[in-house]
Image 1: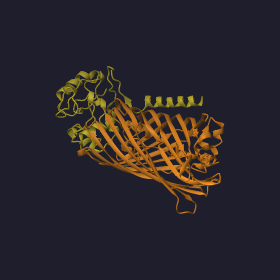
Image 2: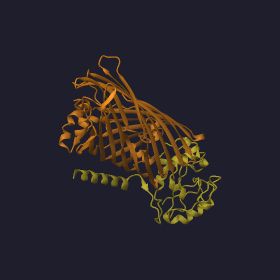
Image 3: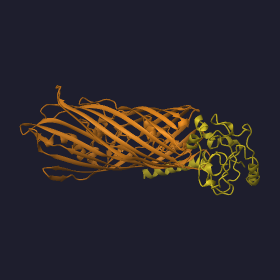
Length: 426
Length: 171
Protein backbone atom coordinates (compact mmCIF):
# COMPACT_ATOMS: atom_id res chain seq x y z
CA UNK A 1 0.00 0.00 0.00
CA UNK A 2 2.74 2.39 0.98
CA UNK A 3 4.29 1.97 -2.40
CA UNK A 4 1.34 3.77 -3.81
CA UNK A 5 1.76 6.86 -1.70
CA UNK A 6 4.77 9.10 -1.60
CA UNK A 7 6.82 7.56 -4.35
CA UNK A 8 3.87 8.00 -6.62
CA UNK A 9 3.29 11.51 -5.38
CA UNK A 10 6.88 12.37 -6.02
CA UNK A 11 7.76 10.46 -9.10
CA UNK A 12 4.77 9.13 -10.93
CA UNK A 13 4.91 12.06 -13.23
CA UNK A 14 8.63 11.78 -13.46
CA UNK A 15 8.34 8.19 -14.58
CA UNK A 16 5.43 8.55 -16.88
CA UNK A 17 5.63 12.15 -17.73
CA UNK A 18 8.05 14.75 -16.52
CA UNK A 19 9.57 16.25 -13.40
CA UNK A 20 6.78 18.72 -12.93
CA UNK A 21 4.09 18.48 -10.32
CA UNK A 22 2.17 21.48 -9.12
CA UNK A 23 1.17 20.02 -5.79
CA UNK A 24 4.55 18.87 -4.59
CA UNK A 25 7.61 20.63 -5.87
CA UNK A 26 10.53 18.44 -5.11
CA UNK A 27 14.04 19.47 -6.19
CA UNK A 28 13.76 17.13 -9.08
CA UNK A 29 11.41 19.56 -10.67
CA UNK A 30 14.12 22.15 -11.00
CA UNK A 31 16.44 20.08 -13.07
CA UNK A 32 16.35 22.49 -15.98
CA UNK A 33 14.32 25.48 -14.88
CA UNK A 34 16.30 28.11 -13.06
CA UNK A 35 19.27 25.84 -12.72
CA UNK A 36 22.45 27.61 -13.79
CA UNK A 37 25.83 26.57 -12.52
CA UNK A 38 27.73 29.60 -13.71
CA UNK A 39 30.65 29.88 -16.08
CA UNK A 40 34.10 31.31 -15.39
CA UNK A 41 35.80 31.91 -12.07
CA UNK A 42 36.20 35.62 -12.74
CA UNK A 43 32.51 36.06 -13.48
CA UNK A 44 31.37 33.89 -10.59
CA UNK A 45 33.59 35.77 -8.15
CA UNK A 46 31.70 38.88 -9.24
CA UNK A 47 28.32 37.43 -8.44
CA UNK A 48 27.91 35.80 -11.81
CA UNK A 49 28.04 39.01 -13.83
CA UNK A 50 29.14 38.12 -17.31
CA UNK A 51 27.21 40.27 -19.76
CA UNK A 52 30.08 42.72 -20.18
CA UNK A 53 32.92 40.35 -19.49
CA UNK A 54 35.90 40.47 -21.83
CA UNK A 55 37.26 36.96 -21.84
CA UNK A 56 36.31 33.72 -23.53
CA UNK A 57 33.23 33.20 -21.37
CA UNK A 58 31.64 36.02 -23.37
CA UNK A 59 30.83 33.28 -25.87
CA UNK A 60 28.17 32.10 -23.44
CA UNK A 61 27.18 35.33 -21.68
CA UNK A 62 27.18 37.85 -24.52
CA UNK A 63 28.98 36.91 -27.76
CA UNK A 64 29.22 40.56 -28.77
CA UNK A 65 31.94 41.08 -26.21
CA UNK A 66 34.15 38.53 -27.87
CA UNK A 67 35.33 41.55 -29.82
CA UNK A 68 37.14 42.76 -26.71
CA UNK A 69 39.54 39.84 -26.79
CA UNK A 70 42.66 40.85 -28.71
CA UNK A 71 44.67 37.66 -28.43
CA UNK A 72 44.11 33.98 -29.07
CA UNK A 73 42.91 32.61 -25.78
CA UNK A 74 42.44 29.15 -24.38
CA UNK A 75 40.54 28.88 -21.15
CA UNK A 76 40.10 25.83 -18.99
CA UNK A 77 37.89 25.79 -15.93
CA UNK A 78 37.14 23.45 -13.06
CA UNK A 79 34.42 23.58 -10.48
CA UNK A 80 33.62 21.97 -7.17
CA UNK A 81 30.03 21.86 -6.03
CA UNK A 82 28.76 20.82 -2.63
CA UNK A 83 25.10 20.79 -1.77
CA UNK A 84 24.04 20.48 1.84
CA UNK A 85 20.47 19.62 2.65
CA UNK A 86 18.83 19.95 6.06
CA UNK A 87 15.30 18.55 6.11
CA UNK A 88 12.89 18.51 9.01
CA UNK A 89 9.67 16.52 8.79
CA UNK A 90 7.00 16.69 11.44
CA UNK A 91 3.31 16.35 11.81
CA UNK A 92 1.52 19.63 11.20
CA UNK A 93 1.22 21.47 14.49
CA UNK A 94 3.93 19.40 16.17
CA UNK A 95 7.23 20.85 17.33
CA UNK A 96 9.32 17.70 17.19
CA UNK A 97 9.97 15.50 14.22
CA UNK A 98 12.75 13.98 12.16
CA UNK A 99 15.85 16.04 11.34
CA UNK A 100 18.20 14.79 8.66
CA UNK A 101 21.30 16.44 7.23
CA UNK A 102 23.00 15.15 4.15
CA UNK A 103 25.35 16.44 1.53
CA UNK A 104 26.69 15.63 -1.90
CA UNK A 105 29.70 16.99 -3.72
CA UNK A 106 31.38 16.71 -7.08
CA UNK A 107 34.45 18.07 -8.80
CA UNK A 108 34.41 18.49 -12.54
CA UNK A 109 36.03 20.17 -15.49
CA UNK A 110 33.47 22.85 -16.15
CA UNK A 111 34.61 24.74 -19.23
CA UNK A 112 37.03 24.73 -22.15
CA UNK A 113 36.90 27.68 -24.51
CA UNK A 114 39.09 28.68 -27.45
CA UNK A 115 38.85 32.23 -28.71
CA UNK A 116 40.50 33.36 -31.94
CA UNK A 117 40.57 37.00 -33.07
CA UNK A 118 40.92 37.42 -36.81
CA UNK A 119 43.42 40.13 -37.77
CA UNK A 120 41.76 43.43 -38.50
CA UNK A 121 43.00 46.90 -39.16
CA UNK A 122 39.73 48.43 -38.05
CA UNK A 123 37.22 47.07 -35.62
CA UNK A 124 37.35 43.47 -34.48
CA UNK A 125 36.20 40.05 -35.61
CA UNK A 126 36.59 37.28 -33.08
CA UNK A 127 35.49 33.66 -33.18
CA UNK A 128 34.91 31.43 -30.22
CA UNK A 129 34.35 27.74 -29.71
CA UNK A 130 33.88 25.95 -26.46
CA UNK A 131 31.93 23.90 -24.03
CA UNK A 132 30.71 24.83 -20.60
CA UNK A 133 28.66 23.22 -17.92
CA UNK A 134 25.33 25.00 -17.93
CA UNK A 135 23.60 23.10 -15.12
CA UNK A 136 24.66 20.78 -12.35
CA UNK A 137 22.11 18.20 -11.32
CA UNK A 138 24.00 17.13 -8.23
CA UNK A 139 21.53 17.11 -5.34
CA UNK A 140 20.51 15.14 -2.37
CA UNK A 141 17.27 14.95 -0.45
CA UNK A 142 16.86 12.76 2.61
CA UNK A 143 13.98 12.67 5.09
CA UNK A 144 11.90 10.41 7.32
CA UNK A 145 8.19 10.19 7.99
CA UNK A 146 5.66 7.84 9.52
CA UNK A 147 2.94 6.03 7.69
CA UNK A 148 0.43 3.30 8.31
CA UNK A 149 0.97 0.06 6.49
CA UNK A 150 -1.22 -2.96 7.13
CA UNK A 151 -2.52 -1.33 10.28
CA UNK A 152 0.93 -0.77 11.77
CA UNK A 153 2.82 2.52 12.11
CA UNK A 154 6.06 2.26 10.25
CA UNK A 155 8.90 4.66 9.67
CA UNK A 156 9.83 5.27 6.10
CA UNK A 157 12.79 7.02 4.60
CA UNK A 158 13.11 8.71 1.25
CA UNK A 159 16.58 9.42 -0.02
CA UNK A 160 17.00 10.89 -3.47
CA UNK A 161 20.45 11.31 -4.96
CA UNK A 162 20.79 13.07 -8.27
CA UNK A 163 23.81 13.58 -10.45
CA UNK A 164 24.76 14.65 -13.94
CA UNK A 165 24.63 17.92 -15.75
CA UNK A 166 23.81 19.76 -18.91
CA UNK A 167 26.70 20.86 -21.09
CA UNK A 168 26.50 23.67 -23.57
CA UNK A 169 28.61 23.54 -26.72
CA UNK A 170 28.87 26.80 -28.56
CA UNK A 171 30.35 28.26 -31.70
CA UNK A 172 30.07 31.99 -32.06
CA UNK A 173 31.54 35.24 -33.21
CA UNK A 174 31.68 38.88 -32.29
CA UNK A 175 32.15 41.76 -34.67
CA UNK A 176 32.44 45.49 -34.26
CA UNK A 177 29.66 47.38 -36.03
CA UNK A 178 31.03 50.78 -35.10
CA UNK A 179 33.67 52.07 -32.75
CA UNK A 180 31.18 51.79 -29.92
CA UNK A 181 28.87 48.96 -30.94
CA UNK A 182 29.60 45.31 -31.32
CA UNK A 183 27.37 42.43 -32.27
CA UNK A 184 27.74 38.75 -31.64
CA UNK A 185 25.97 35.49 -32.10
CA UNK A 186 26.41 31.89 -31.13
CA UNK A 187 24.88 28.59 -32.02
CA UNK A 188 24.45 26.28 -29.07
CA UNK A 189 24.17 22.53 -28.77
CA UNK A 190 23.09 21.11 -25.46
CA UNK A 191 24.01 17.69 -24.27
CA UNK A 192 23.71 16.05 -20.91
CA UNK A 193 22.39 13.41 -18.61
CA UNK A 194 20.45 13.42 -15.39
CA UNK A 195 20.51 10.40 -13.13
CA UNK A 196 18.15 10.05 -10.22
CA UNK A 197 18.35 7.36 -7.58
CA UNK A 198 15.53 7.00 -5.05
CA UNK A 199 15.96 4.70 -2.09
CA UNK A 200 12.94 4.15 0.12
CA UNK A 201 13.51 1.54 2.80
CA UNK A 202 10.69 0.70 5.17
CA UNK A 203 11.46 0.32 8.87
CA UNK A 204 9.42 -1.47 11.50
CA UNK A 205 10.52 -1.47 15.11
CA UNK A 206 13.90 -0.12 14.11
CA UNK A 207 14.67 -2.85 11.61
CA UNK A 208 14.52 -2.54 7.85
CA UNK A 209 11.54 -4.50 6.67
CA UNK A 210 11.82 -3.96 2.98
CA UNK A 211 13.85 -2.01 0.52
CA UNK A 212 12.74 -0.16 -2.51
CA UNK A 213 14.99 1.53 -5.03
CA UNK A 214 14.24 3.39 -8.18
CA UNK A 215 16.60 4.53 -10.91
CA UNK A 216 15.72 7.12 -13.50
CA UNK A 217 17.90 8.43 -16.29
CA UNK A 218 17.17 11.37 -18.54
CA UNK A 219 19.32 12.01 -21.58
CA UNK A 220 19.21 15.48 -23.11
CA UNK A 221 20.19 16.83 -26.45
CA UNK A 222 19.04 20.09 -27.91
CA UNK A 223 19.96 23.22 -29.79
CA UNK A 224 19.50 26.94 -29.58
CA UNK A 225 21.11 30.26 -30.39
CA UNK A 226 22.05 33.49 -28.75
CA UNK A 227 22.65 36.97 -30.08
CA UNK A 228 23.97 39.95 -28.22
CA UNK A 229 24.94 43.59 -28.45
CA UNK A 230 27.70 45.41 -26.66
CA UNK A 231 27.66 49.19 -26.50
CA UNK A 232 30.14 51.65 -25.09
CA UNK A 233 28.09 54.67 -24.05
CA UNK A 234 31.05 56.60 -22.75
CA UNK A 235 34.58 55.90 -21.73
CA UNK A 236 33.41 54.59 -18.40
CA UNK A 237 29.96 53.17 -19.07
CA UNK A 238 29.14 50.14 -21.20
CA UNK A 239 25.88 48.30 -21.78
CA UNK A 240 25.16 44.86 -23.13
CA UNK A 241 22.05 43.00 -24.13
CA UNK A 242 21.46 39.44 -25.24
CA UNK A 243 18.59 37.24 -26.27
CA UNK A 244 18.73 33.49 -26.03
CA UNK A 245 16.36 31.70 -28.32
CA UNK A 246 13.97 29.05 -27.06
CA UNK A 247 15.89 25.85 -26.60
CA UNK A 248 14.29 22.60 -27.65
CA UNK A 249 15.60 19.66 -25.66
CA UNK A 250 14.97 16.14 -26.88
CA UNK A 251 14.70 13.96 -23.80
CA UNK A 252 14.92 10.18 -23.61
CA UNK A 253 13.93 8.77 -20.28
CA UNK A 254 14.62 5.28 -18.99
CA UNK A 255 14.23 3.78 -15.58
CA UNK A 256 13.75 0.76 -13.42
CA UNK A 257 12.80 -0.17 -9.89
CA UNK A 258 14.06 -2.85 -7.56
CA UNK A 259 12.10 -4.38 -4.70
CA UNK A 260 12.67 -7.70 -2.96
CA UNK A 261 15.42 -8.34 -5.49
CA UNK A 262 13.09 -8.07 -8.44
CA UNK A 263 14.06 -5.59 -11.12
CA UNK A 264 11.26 -4.05 -13.11
CA UNK A 265 12.34 -1.91 -16.04
CA UNK A 266 10.26 1.01 -17.24
CA UNK A 267 9.62 1.57 -20.88
CA UNK A 268 11.52 4.36 -22.59
CA UNK A 269 9.72 7.67 -22.85
CA UNK A 270 10.70 10.23 -25.46
CA UNK A 271 9.53 13.81 -25.54
CA UNK A 272 10.65 17.36 -26.13
CA UNK A 273 10.96 20.14 -23.62
CA UNK A 274 11.00 23.67 -24.91
CA UNK A 275 12.71 26.29 -22.79
CA UNK A 276 11.46 29.85 -23.26
CA UNK A 277 13.32 32.95 -24.43
CA UNK A 278 15.89 34.37 -22.02
CA UNK A 279 16.44 38.12 -22.07
CA UNK A 280 19.47 39.50 -20.34
CA UNK A 281 21.17 42.84 -19.96
CA UNK A 282 24.24 44.08 -18.19
CA UNK A 283 26.20 47.21 -17.47
CA UNK A 284 29.80 47.92 -16.66
CA UNK A 285 31.33 50.99 -15.15
CA UNK A 286 35.05 51.53 -14.86
CA UNK A 287 36.78 53.82 -12.42
CA UNK A 288 40.51 53.49 -12.89
CA UNK A 289 41.37 50.35 -10.97
CA UNK A 290 37.79 49.55 -10.00
CA UNK A 291 35.19 47.89 -12.21
CA UNK A 292 31.54 47.54 -11.30
CA UNK A 293 29.24 45.18 -13.18
CA UNK A 294 25.55 44.40 -12.89
CA UNK A 295 23.38 41.94 -14.81
CA UNK A 296 19.70 41.20 -14.97
CA UNK A 297 18.05 38.26 -16.67
CA UNK A 298 14.39 37.67 -17.36
CA UNK A 299 12.81 34.29 -18.09
CA UNK A 300 9.16 33.35 -18.03
CA UNK A 301 9.41 29.72 -17.03
CA UNK A 302 5.66 29.27 -17.25
CA UNK A 303 6.16 29.24 -21.02
CA UNK A 304 8.02 25.96 -20.85
CA UNK A 305 6.13 23.28 -22.71
CA UNK A 306 6.29 19.66 -23.69
CA UNK A 307 5.82 18.42 -27.20
CA UNK A 308 6.27 15.40 -29.40
CA UNK A 309 4.47 13.22 -26.87
CA UNK A 310 0.73 13.45 -26.36
CA UNK A 311 0.85 12.15 -22.81
CA UNK A 312 3.43 14.76 -21.91
CA UNK A 313 1.56 17.60 -23.54
CA UNK A 314 -1.27 17.00 -21.09
CA UNK A 315 0.97 18.49 -18.42
CA UNK A 316 1.55 21.80 -20.17
CA UNK A 317 -1.29 23.37 -18.22
CA UNK A 318 0.34 22.30 -15.00
CA UNK A 319 3.61 23.86 -16.06
CA UNK A 320 1.81 27.12 -16.57
CA UNK A 321 0.35 26.92 -13.09
CA UNK A 322 3.46 25.69 -11.30
CA UNK A 323 6.11 27.94 -12.81
CA UNK A 324 6.45 31.68 -12.91
CA UNK A 325 8.49 34.41 -14.50
CA UNK A 326 11.78 35.20 -12.85
CA UNK A 327 14.04 38.24 -12.84
CA UNK A 328 17.55 37.45 -11.71
CA UNK A 329 19.83 40.18 -10.47
CA UNK A 330 23.57 40.08 -10.09
CA UNK A 331 26.15 42.66 -9.09
CA UNK A 332 29.89 42.42 -8.68
CA UNK A 333 33.02 44.47 -8.41
CA UNK A 334 36.69 44.08 -9.19
CA UNK A 335 39.62 46.02 -7.85
CA UNK A 336 42.92 45.58 -9.60
CA UNK A 337 46.26 46.06 -7.92
CA UNK A 338 48.31 46.18 -11.09
CA UNK A 339 51.67 46.55 -9.41
CA UNK A 340 51.39 43.01 -8.04
CA UNK A 341 49.23 41.67 -10.90
CA UNK A 342 46.33 40.91 -8.59
CA UNK A 343 42.60 41.42 -9.03
CA UNK A 344 40.25 41.19 -6.05
CA UNK A 345 36.57 40.49 -6.67
CA UNK A 346 33.30 40.15 -4.82
CA UNK A 347 29.65 39.96 -5.73
CA UNK A 348 26.08 39.33 -4.73
CA UNK A 349 23.27 37.64 -6.59
CA UNK A 350 19.56 37.08 -6.25
CA UNK A 351 18.29 34.06 -8.12
CA UNK A 352 14.61 33.44 -7.37
CA UNK A 353 13.23 29.96 -7.70
CA UNK A 354 10.96 29.63 -10.73
CA UNK A 355 8.10 28.03 -8.81
CA UNK A 356 4.78 29.52 -7.95
CA UNK A 357 4.05 29.55 -4.27
CA UNK A 358 0.80 27.97 -3.16
CA UNK A 359 -0.89 26.78 -0.03
CA UNK A 360 1.08 23.58 0.11
CA UNK A 361 4.40 25.08 -1.00
CA UNK A 362 6.37 28.11 0.11
CA UNK A 363 9.90 29.19 -0.67
CA UNK A 364 12.34 31.93 0.11
CA UNK A 365 14.21 33.63 -2.63
CA UNK A 366 17.48 32.01 -3.53
CA UNK A 367 20.39 34.39 -3.06
CA UNK A 368 24.08 34.32 -2.32
CA UNK A 369 27.41 36.04 -2.29
CA UNK A 370 30.77 35.38 -3.84
CA UNK A 371 34.34 36.50 -3.73
CA UNK A 372 37.60 35.59 -5.36
CA UNK A 373 40.79 36.78 -6.92
CA UNK A 374 42.82 36.55 -10.08
CA UNK A 375 46.52 36.58 -10.82
CA UNK A 376 48.07 37.75 -14.04
CA UNK A 377 51.13 35.59 -14.56
CA UNK A 378 53.89 36.69 -16.91
CA UNK A 379 51.44 38.83 -18.92
CA UNK A 380 50.09 35.83 -20.80
CA UNK A 381 48.18 33.77 -18.25
CA UNK A 382 45.35 34.66 -15.92
CA UNK A 383 44.48 32.35 -13.06
CA UNK A 384 41.16 33.07 -11.39
CA UNK A 385 39.56 31.60 -8.31
CA UNK A 386 36.07 32.06 -6.93
CA UNK A 387 34.05 30.93 -3.97
CA UNK A 388 30.27 31.11 -4.27
CA UNK A 389 27.79 30.51 -1.49
CA UNK A 390 24.08 30.31 -2.15
CA UNK A 391 21.11 29.21 -0.13
CA UNK A 392 17.36 29.02 -0.02
CA UNK A 393 14.66 27.32 1.99
CA UNK A 394 11.25 25.96 1.19
CA UNK A 395 8.48 24.01 2.85
CA UNK A 396 5.87 21.55 1.73
CA UNK A 397 2.69 20.15 3.21
CA UNK A 398 2.35 16.51 2.26
CA UNK A 399 -0.91 14.66 2.57
CA UNK A 400 -1.73 11.03 2.03
CA UNK A 401 -4.33 8.61 3.41
CA UNK A 402 -1.42 6.41 4.45
CA UNK A 403 0.32 9.04 6.54
CA UNK A 404 -0.23 8.94 10.25
CA UNK A 405 -0.76 12.68 10.08
CA UNK A 406 -0.33 15.39 7.51
CA UNK A 407 3.39 16.08 7.20
CA UNK A 408 5.13 19.42 7.16
CA UNK A 409 8.51 19.26 5.43
CA UNK A 410 10.99 22.13 5.86
CA UNK A 411 14.05 22.13 3.70
CA UNK A 412 17.20 24.28 3.91
CA UNK A 413 19.52 24.01 0.97
CA UNK A 414 23.02 25.43 0.95
CA UNK A 415 25.37 25.38 -1.99
CA UNK A 416 29.09 25.97 -1.77
CA UNK A 417 30.93 26.15 -5.03
CA UNK A 418 34.54 26.71 -5.98
CA UNK A 419 35.65 27.76 -9.43
CA UNK A 420 39.15 27.70 -10.84
CA UNK A 421 39.91 29.02 -14.30
CA UNK A 422 43.18 29.32 -16.16
CA UNK A 423 43.33 31.43 -19.31
CA UNK A 424 46.33 31.53 -21.58
CA UNK A 425 46.62 34.22 -24.25
CA UNK A 426 49.00 33.42 -27.06
CA UNK B 1 11.09 24.13 -43.40
CA UNK B 2 10.56 26.81 -40.82
CA UNK B 3 13.87 25.94 -39.17
CA UNK B 4 15.67 26.15 -42.50
CA UNK B 5 14.09 29.50 -43.21
CA UNK B 6 15.28 30.90 -39.90
CA UNK B 7 18.76 29.50 -40.51
CA UNK B 8 18.96 31.03 -43.98
CA UNK B 9 17.78 34.40 -42.72
CA UNK B 10 20.31 34.25 -39.92
CA UNK B 11 23.16 33.39 -42.27
CA UNK B 12 22.18 36.17 -44.66
CA UNK B 13 22.09 38.60 -41.79
CA UNK B 14 25.51 37.52 -40.63
CA UNK B 15 26.91 37.70 -44.14
CA UNK B 16 25.57 41.22 -44.53
CA UNK B 17 27.15 42.21 -41.26
CA UNK B 18 30.54 40.84 -42.11
CA UNK B 19 30.67 42.06 -45.68
CA UNK B 20 29.69 45.64 -45.24
CA UNK B 21 30.15 46.68 -41.71
CA UNK B 22 32.57 48.85 -39.91
CA UNK B 23 35.07 46.10 -39.18
CA UNK B 24 37.62 45.56 -41.92
CA UNK B 25 39.55 42.39 -41.77
CA UNK B 26 43.15 41.99 -42.79
CA UNK B 27 44.08 39.87 -45.78
CA UNK B 28 47.46 38.35 -45.15
CA UNK B 29 49.31 37.41 -48.24
CA UNK B 30 47.94 39.98 -50.63
CA UNK B 31 50.59 42.01 -52.29
CA UNK B 32 48.89 45.21 -51.55
CA UNK B 33 48.85 44.28 -47.92
CA UNK B 34 45.86 44.85 -45.78
CA UNK B 35 46.36 48.50 -45.32
CA UNK B 36 43.45 50.11 -46.99
CA UNK B 37 42.27 52.69 -44.56
CA UNK B 38 42.42 56.28 -45.60
CA UNK B 39 43.36 59.23 -43.51
CA UNK B 40 39.84 59.75 -42.32
CA UNK B 41 39.94 56.40 -40.64
CA UNK B 42 43.23 56.98 -39.03
CA UNK B 43 41.67 57.30 -35.63
CA UNK B 44 39.49 54.27 -36.06
CA UNK B 45 41.97 51.49 -36.01
CA UNK B 46 41.78 48.64 -33.56
CA UNK B 47 43.04 50.55 -30.62
CA UNK B 48 40.78 53.53 -30.93
CA UNK B 49 37.67 51.44 -31.21
CA UNK B 50 38.20 50.17 -27.71
CA UNK B 51 38.76 53.50 -26.17
CA UNK B 52 37.46 52.59 -22.75
CA UNK B 53 40.74 50.99 -21.81
CA UNK B 54 41.56 51.66 -18.19
CA UNK B 55 44.73 53.60 -17.73
CA UNK B 56 46.49 50.80 -15.92
CA UNK B 57 46.36 48.70 -19.07
CA UNK B 58 48.61 51.30 -20.59
CA UNK B 59 50.78 52.13 -17.64
CA UNK B 60 51.42 48.54 -16.67
CA UNK B 61 52.95 46.64 -19.53
CA UNK B 62 51.72 43.18 -18.67
CA UNK B 63 48.06 44.21 -18.27
CA UNK B 64 48.19 46.06 -21.54
CA UNK B 65 49.72 43.09 -23.28
CA UNK B 66 47.05 40.77 -21.93
CA UNK B 67 44.00 42.91 -22.54
CA UNK B 68 44.89 45.39 -25.22
CA UNK B 69 47.52 44.11 -27.60
CA UNK B 70 46.19 42.15 -30.59
CA UNK B 71 48.29 39.13 -31.32
CA UNK B 72 49.00 40.10 -34.91
CA UNK B 73 50.74 43.25 -33.81
CA UNK B 74 53.56 41.02 -32.65
CA UNK B 75 54.41 40.22 -36.23
CA UNK B 76 54.69 43.56 -37.85
CA UNK B 77 55.46 46.26 -35.38
CA UNK B 78 58.90 47.42 -34.50
CA UNK B 79 59.21 44.98 -31.69
CA UNK B 80 58.32 47.22 -28.82
CA UNK B 81 55.10 45.38 -28.20
CA UNK B 82 56.53 41.91 -28.03
CA UNK B 83 57.43 40.52 -24.71
CA UNK B 84 59.20 37.60 -26.31
CA UNK B 85 61.81 38.14 -28.94
CA UNK B 86 61.40 35.81 -31.89
CA UNK B 87 64.88 36.74 -33.03
CA UNK B 88 66.39 35.64 -29.78
CA UNK B 89 65.14 32.08 -29.57
CA UNK B 90 61.97 33.25 -27.99
CA UNK B 91 63.69 34.36 -24.84
CA UNK B 92 62.17 37.16 -22.86
CA UNK B 93 63.52 40.49 -23.94
CA UNK B 94 65.63 42.27 -21.44
CA UNK B 95 64.82 45.78 -22.46
CA UNK B 96 61.48 46.23 -24.20
CA UNK B 97 61.83 48.35 -27.26
CA UNK B 98 65.37 47.37 -28.07
CA UNK B 99 64.69 44.23 -30.03
CA UNK B 100 65.00 44.00 -33.72
CA UNK B 101 61.90 43.67 -35.80
CA UNK B 102 60.74 40.07 -36.06
CA UNK B 103 60.13 38.58 -39.45
CA UNK B 104 56.68 39.38 -40.61
CA UNK B 105 54.22 36.53 -40.84
CA UNK B 106 52.23 38.34 -43.47
CA UNK B 107 53.21 39.39 -46.91
CA UNK B 108 53.27 43.01 -47.80
CA UNK B 109 53.44 44.33 -44.30
CA UNK B 110 56.80 45.97 -44.38
CA UNK B 111 56.56 49.60 -43.67
CA UNK B 112 53.39 49.38 -41.66
CA UNK B 113 53.30 52.56 -39.80
CA UNK B 114 49.80 53.36 -38.73
CA UNK B 115 49.51 54.52 -35.19
CA UNK B 116 48.09 52.59 -32.36
CA UNK B 117 47.68 54.30 -29.12
CA UNK B 118 47.80 51.30 -26.84
CA UNK B 119 51.42 51.10 -25.99
CA UNK B 120 52.44 48.75 -23.26
CA UNK B 121 54.98 50.54 -21.20
CA UNK B 122 53.54 53.85 -22.13
CA UNK B 123 55.38 54.48 -25.36
CA UNK B 124 56.76 57.89 -25.90
CA UNK B 125 53.53 59.51 -24.80
CA UNK B 126 54.12 58.29 -21.31
CA UNK B 127 51.03 56.16 -21.43
CA UNK B 128 49.09 58.34 -19.10
CA UNK B 129 45.76 58.11 -20.82
CA UNK B 130 43.88 55.83 -23.13
CA UNK B 131 42.85 56.75 -26.59
CA UNK B 132 45.82 58.96 -27.36
CA UNK B 133 48.35 58.42 -30.03
CA UNK B 134 51.81 57.56 -28.91
CA UNK B 135 53.47 59.57 -31.58
CA UNK B 136 55.11 62.75 -30.51
CA UNK B 137 53.48 64.50 -33.44
CA UNK B 138 50.04 63.58 -32.25
CA UNK B 139 48.37 66.51 -33.90
CA UNK B 140 49.42 65.61 -37.37
CA UNK B 141 47.91 62.94 -39.53
CA UNK B 142 50.10 60.22 -40.88
CA UNK B 143 51.58 60.74 -44.22
CA UNK B 144 49.28 59.64 -46.98
CA UNK B 145 50.85 57.05 -49.22
CA UNK B 146 49.96 55.01 -52.19
CA UNK B 147 50.38 51.30 -52.53
CA UNK B 148 53.50 51.86 -54.56
CA UNK B 149 55.17 53.77 -51.83
CA UNK B 150 56.16 50.81 -49.76
CA UNK B 151 59.85 51.05 -50.42
CA UNK B 152 59.87 54.70 -49.57
CA UNK B 153 57.96 53.93 -46.48
CA UNK B 154 60.46 51.30 -45.43
CA UNK B 155 63.29 53.67 -45.89
CA UNK B 156 61.65 56.15 -43.67
CA UNK B 157 61.20 53.56 -40.95
CA UNK B 158 64.86 52.74 -40.87
CA UNK B 159 65.78 56.39 -40.63
CA UNK B 160 63.32 57.12 -37.92
CA UNK B 161 63.54 54.09 -35.73
CA UNK B 162 63.57 55.88 -32.44
CA UNK B 163 60.17 57.46 -32.84
CA UNK B 164 56.89 55.68 -32.23
CA UNK B 165 55.73 54.15 -35.43
CA UNK B 166 52.36 54.26 -37.00
CA UNK B 167 51.21 50.75 -37.74
CA UNK B 168 49.09 51.38 -40.74
CA UNK B 169 50.01 52.99 -43.96
CA UNK B 170 47.42 54.62 -46.12
CA UNK B 171 46.73 54.58 -49.81
